[in-house]
Image 1: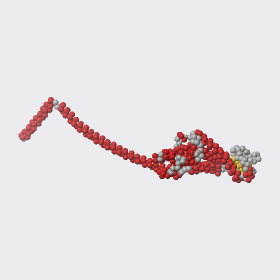
Image 2 (image 1 turned 180 degrees about the vertical axis):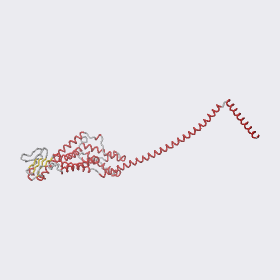
Image 3 (image 1 turned 90 degrees about the vertical axis):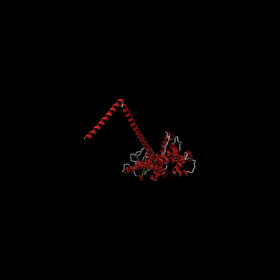
Image 4 (image 1 turned 135 degrees about the horizontal axis):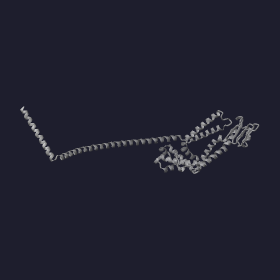
Length: 393
């Protein structure tokens, strides 16, 4: 896709010059080509021998009893006797036996204005392509596409071909063999290099305008606007069908064919533009470019998948490390709990011993001792009297 930087941004001077050329050549084609061609065609097709002789003078009005061709700017009306014809300023009038009894009114700018505008556009494109870039609208676009194509070649070849080498092989006087590049990168790169070579020949000699236009049409216009041009052609065909339908329903009188002819010239212009666009569209190269883009896309997806697998593996390793860490922490906590449990048991025993030691003083010791002796004596007496009683029985 082509993109332009600030260096190649259009300026008002370029637009003004292009518009001036467009208006001038549209008017010139209408006045110097369409008008005499229409006059010649009408006379050769419908004029009688007497009208042919009168037309040799080159007058804009050729009028006889059986033929009328009025291409003047005058206004005329039918006289009181019903002779003559009605004519508005700027209309063309033609009346002949083979065209019917009534005069046919042609509005030249409605009938042929679209075709003249199309011709003026084509000539304005060619003319501004031969002007210097600061004032040439199309010249500026071609210069932009030269830089964009070289940048695209640089991106497609990567580090395998240096920028200096690309500048050298795309020079206007370069005759380097491009077979190794074609084997390595395919025919699209070679075609782009050849187009840049031809465009740089145009840079050196501006009259070689079609060498520069080929690069612009092939690398930008045909790629960016092919669908638009095709849509315009279909739209023109739709308008033509509608006009023909209305003409068939008699809503457009036979004496006013300007609208119908305008629709025909519109469709002719759009089909011509479509033909030019298709001429500069390289199908095989576009398919090769599409396949390469798909391959590059597949490579990118493959690398993304590999990175995803690597990321997943790394996450698995991180998870395993985390589980191992948690296990170690659990073991450490268990050992700490066991240690704390053992320490608490010893501590409790020590506390109990201190409590017993503090409780058993000298007085309590005598009381405990007397109590123990008394209990022992009572137990011994009870045991002795119990045995004597058993003997007496």
